[in-house]
Structures are given as structure tokens and as C-alpha cells.
Image (spheres, rainbow, N blue to C red):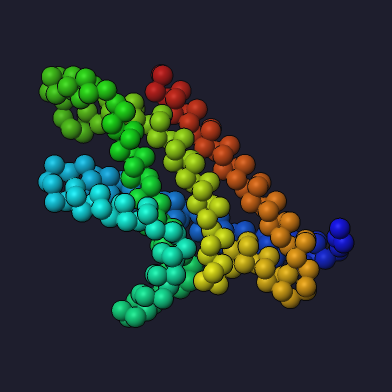
Length: 221
């Protein structure tokens, strides 16, 4: 392989390092919004008011059933037609957050439903308030299965950020393609982009495992 180390350290690494900041920012913000959006969708889906529950269920299925790339393009090209113009990065973050909100909603729902029905009935028998029921009984038991699944989606969101390059967001893959186009050298740029993603994914996975262990220790104590 024709590998140029000077080109790697002088051109590729600085530009990919800068792009890595955009990738991490897009990942963290998208994940944060997805957590909140998923919680809202889950509460709507589990509503006792049937029309609300039905609409929320259909919205979740629609979002989950359409490709993320299509959703990014839809927001990027359709929103300006209704006089809503957002920067490409904001549009991409919004699309990723909406898409993953539907996924995290199902994670929340599965976690809550994993709590034995007897725990809910015991809380009612003890005349506990809704707040104390969730804080003391339901949430501590639902977190262990929820956190690993949410961690997987965090890593997945990180790997979804290259899709933002299709709307000219300067994340890692977009930067690597620009370097290759400018210098007609793709080996160094694409290889290092892959290494960046691998290292960041491993770090994110380690953080998720540490969080999971911390929650388990907190519950046991």
C-alpha cells in the first residue's frame, strides 16, 4: 500500500480531528434529544386515552419503518418549502433524534413492562403516591435492562453520523471524502476515519458499561 506518513500527520489527522468534534457533538445532542423524545412517545403510547395511544403507536411505527437517510433528506429539502430553514447540522441532528426517539420509546416501554405486575399492585396496596411508586419501586427495577439498550443506541447514533455527509455536514466521513477528492488520496483519509470511529465506539461502549455497573451497585445498596 502506498502510504504517506507526512501527508497523514500534516493533512489528514488535523482535519479529521476537527471533524471528530462535530461528530461527537452531533452524537451527544442527538442522543440527548432522543432520550427525551422517546420518553414522551412512550408516555403517549401507554396513555389510557385510546386515540392518543393509537396515534403515538402509528407515529413510532412510521418513524421506525422508514430509512434514516430518507428522513434526513426529507427534513433538509421539505422544511425550507414551509419557510423553515435550518443549518445542515441542525437538520441532521433533528432527523437522527426523531428517528432514535421511536427506538428509545420502545426501550422505555419494554423496561417498564419488565417490572412484575405484583410490584405495581404492592405499591397500590401500600397507598404509595405515583411519584414514590416510580422513584422507589418501578424505576430502580426497570433501569438495568434499559441502560444497556440505550447504550447500544448511543453507539448506533455515533455510527449514523456519516449519513450527515449527504447534506454537507463536516463530520469525519465528509472530511475524509473531501481530503480524498482534493489530494486524490483516499487510503490514509478513509483508514484513519475508520480508526477514529472504532476508538470512539470503544470509548462509548466502555462508558455505557461503567454506567450500567454503577446503576447496578446503586440498586444493590
